[in-house]
Figure 1 (cartoon, rainbow, N blue to C red):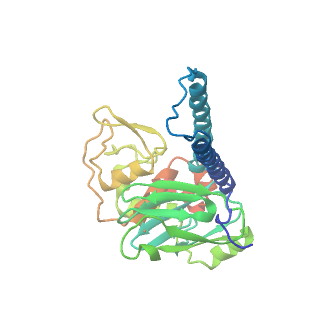
Figure 2: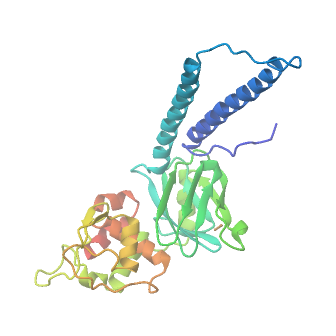
Length: 332
Ligand code: CUA
C-alpha cells in the first residue's frame, strides 16, 4: 500500500514528533468516540417511553464522578504538556557540535551559505548523520522554512534571526517549502535538501564555487567597513584609546546597556547593533556609531555576525570547520 499519511521520517527528531502527534491523535480519538458513543447510548437507553413519563428524582451523589472526569483529563493534559515541552526543548536547542549554515529568505527564493563558503539557491546539501544548525533571516517579508521529512518548521523574519536544527538520518532528496504566504510566487518558493554520504558531500563541496568562509568574509568586511578603527581588539596599539567596546568574547554574554537595562549578545542583538546602532547603546559608551543600514546586504550582515561570534573563541571557530577564522580573529 503506497498511501503515505505522514512524510518520510528522515531526521533524529522526526520519530519523536510523530510519536507525540500520534499519541495526541489517539487520546483525542479515544475521547471523541467515547463521548459520541455515550451520547448515542444515553439517547436510546433513557428515551421517554410513554407520554407522561417523568424522570427519577432519586438523590445521587455526583461529586466522585465530577472529580473523576475533571482529574483524569487534567492529568492527561499535563502529561501531554510535559511530553510536548520535552520534544520542544530538543527540537529548538541545537547540539554543541552542530555545523552552522546561514539561510536568507527573500521573495521568492532561499539563499543558503555553507560554513565553508559554498553558496546555494533553493537547495541545501548536507552530510548524513551530521547535526545541522540553520541560522535564518529574511530580506523582505515573513517566510517560513519548512522541511516536512525532518519535522522542521520555523518562521523566517526580517530584522531578526531564528534557528532550527536537525540531524539527517537517511541519504536522499527531501522537500523544502515556504510555509507562510509571502506574495505572488509563494507557492514557487520551494527547493530541496539533498542528504549525501559524508565522502560524497566532501566531493560535492570541492566542485562547488569556493568562496571565502563566512567568518573570513565577515573579517574582510570588518576591515573594509572600518569597524576595526573603533572596535579595537586586544591587539590594539597601547597608545590608542578605543572609541567603542571590544567585541572579543562578546557573543552569548550579557551586555549592560545605557539606562540600566541588559541584553544577551545573540545574533539578533549583533545584527541590530550594525543596522540600528542607537537602539541599544552599551553602558559607558557614547552613541556615536553610524548606521550601516543600506550599506550592507543581508548576507553581508550574516557574515559580520558569523565573524563577531567567533571573536575570542578560536576553538569554536575551528570546530565550525572554518580554518580561516583563526587567522582572521587576530585582525579584529
Ligand atoms: Cu516565502 Cu512563502
